[in-house]
Image (tube, rainbow, N blue to C red; front, top):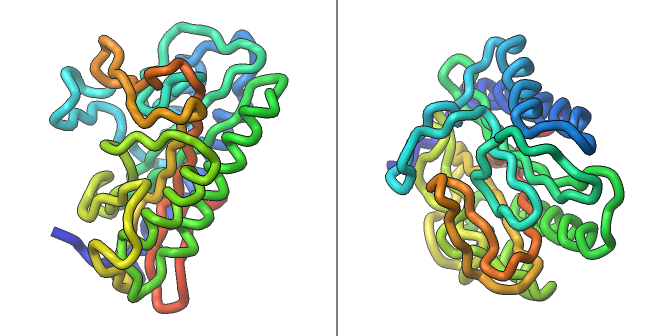
Length: 255
């Protein structure tokens, strides 16, 4: 069931969105060669705790997962696409890191993700990140009242395909509100004019993830969570929580 949010609900989600933005900024600032992924998770935990927020990631267990998620961020490095579990491994110069984080404040959720490199940035990584960020902006711009989910999906997918990147078919954006994952699903590729009608009060998490190697396929690690590219190519992932309003898209996870 799709729930349309009131203005008060959107304002509450905006509060949670600022916490997410703060957590992502703090993690990015802390990321450096030699830092452990578990340390980055602790940075995000501190931001959430000091803001009076709780994590919708910690303990989350969807149907595909063999165990509850053990952290408050997903930390996906290089060929990991999404859902990477923070561990004791250390970041290295040149790593491409994607961090996904959510927050619940007073029962309302927001969710966002960012990709960045640690230390030196390879030109091909910069292009991948720039293109994925561009696709997110296009998806946000398409999230207007009267459009359809397919318009958002097409805006994202057309940019990724034109750049020659792969797009994993089974994972994408989603509705969000009282729960982190709600209807409707928001694929990262699709046909315009199809799917759920966007109405004011609908809130969706838009999250393109592009694979540099060009293949759409992915493999799941033994942990049952981490998705990796099948060709060893790198991946990038950007996400915002976005409300459809009469005045146009309202991004709830900006700083």
